[in-house]
Image (tube, rainbow, N blue to C red; front, side, top):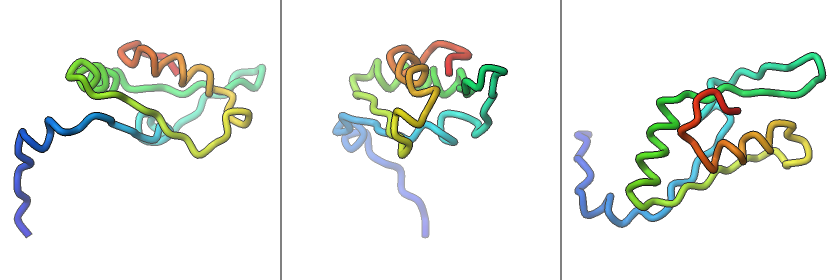
Length: 90
């Protein structure tokens, strides 16, 4: 089946871009410090893409299946969501 390009009028209707974080915006790896805190690495190229999406007027939402109380890096993910252009934020 031949893929058809999506017309610009269809793209213009998008108001929200929601995505999972773990394994989508990260490489799936977890760094565990000696104090048992987790850190995840985000790709700056993905961050730039999110900045461009937001600049086009589309809202962003991050979705996670892990409850916040079980996710040590949840606070870091939330902070990065407010500024997805920050390199190295986890």
